[in-house]
Amino acid sequence: MSTWRQAWRRRWQGWMERRIPPCSELTLGHRSIFIFPSAIGWLYAALLLVMLLTAINYQNSLIYGMTFWLFSVGISAMHFSFGNLSGLTLTAGHALPVFAGDTIELPVRLRSSKSKAHQSLLLRYPNGPEVVADVNRGDESEALLTVTTQKRGLLNAERFLLESRYPLGIFRCWSWIRLRYPVVVYPQPIWTPFRFASGTDGEWLEGASIDSSGEQDFQGLRSYQPGDSLKRIAWKQYARGRGLVSKDFDSDEGASCWFDWEALAPLDTEQRLSHLTAWVLKAHANGWHYGLRLPGKTLPQLHSELHLEACLKALALFGYSEEAS
Image: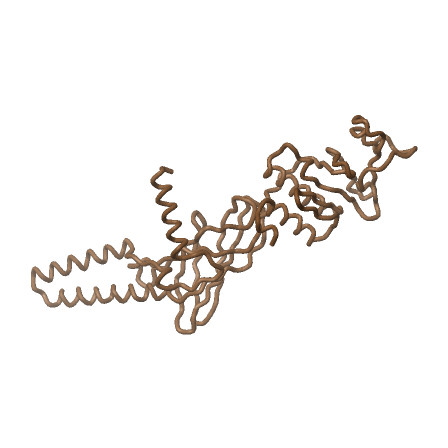
């Protein structure tokens, strides 16, 4: 995109932010509705001009009457086109969290007043599918708009287009609306072999595996005891001069493990978050008790849907001020 187009786009976006600020609910009025003749409307205006010139040239009263009658029809169509959007209330519905790169469905609730209905409403996000909706007088309907998420964090949905050419199609009436959706976009999960944090010294086991049968659930590290299987000895710990330690397994309460931010060094922030997201999802699916250690935040070892949601939210909002909320 050229420099002048980028500058024009920034100025347009800034003007729209001031004229129609982002909100969770908006009632359309004079400041938020734009109207202009459509392509058919310009042809209609050209026809009226030709008819007027013909009437002047031939001094024909019938053509005069027809021209002015069609002109009044056009003025009435402009009034009804604007009124078809005016007074319509749009509210952001409840959207479910998704992972970065996935398509999310954003519900838009459309509510009319008791005095009029709203017909042939077209809604769509840029490069998204178009949705047609009608709202009866004093009624409410819902339109599901789809948009592809780009990055983790709180969803920052762009403006969508609301358009109508009702009733005759000679005027295009539209608005660009930005609704706020309090929905979290989780990091895109990228799988890599587990690296379980172990002990209090910050060490971790790379590629450690857990028997999915439930007879060998990873619990942590403990001191070596005579009779321990050679497969259970943490040989990397021994090679580092830390003595013999064994991998401890607990088959009663399920696997208990820690996922540590530092275990993924020297990867960058987004890669670490993506790998930790994949680990959390896998551990939850396996029924393990898992904890999460992030800089400045630690989530204890638990297993529940609420714990999964808390871990994913912490990963999604890592580095954002909204995380505190």
